[in-house]
Picture (tube, helix red, strand yellow):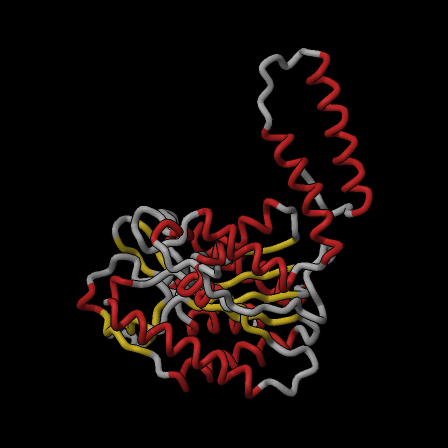
Length: 320
């Protein structure tokens, strides 16, 4: 008896992720879920240097600024609630010091520029098509930083607007890096603060726009791809036992399930074998012995050290 409908997935035929890959992840909070897995298994990656970015135009602006090596100045930041903020960045970069904020912003721009140039894979996760326009400056913001809502207009990006933004993102990446595989996905996290119907409309716009943009770029030698994390969550994991207590975010079981699906498509078989060894080492490093001085534990540490040396010999960039 079949008790679940599953989304058919095929392994990527070209340019799979391995331990020589360098990965840039940008977008919604789901980036951090996948990023934590990449960190755990010791893949080279950079996640959200400007913090979580939910909407496509915010991601486009970060990539444009990095590709053009645009520097931030005092005109790009503002003071609110005893801190300095930038509308282009998440509040995790906000700082009590104006100088520190500008230093951090420009440091992250430099880091993003370097990663854009060197990445073998760029993963972009879109969270919402809803955006906020700052009335005074007539600009869209990545984060409102708890500035009163009356200072913003809420808008829904059209499918064409999102598609144009994604095509611009592809062109910007290609202008500095012609070899990277670009992978799009839609966050499985529902933005219910926008409303139930509004969230569905938003996700529909994102999905339609991604496929429209991919169709426009289908002739490229390195074909951009789409990974159905949203569809896996909505269809294969539709039961609430796969959600966190807020009934909105996927729980660890769901994240691990989607990660395994991602691994089956995008991680090479050779890298998957190394991942098993890395997992053993990680569990060994987390092990807390009852008797640290026992002969058995000392032998365990020696075997663990040997495993680490073997992995690092094959993959020198891995460190524990």
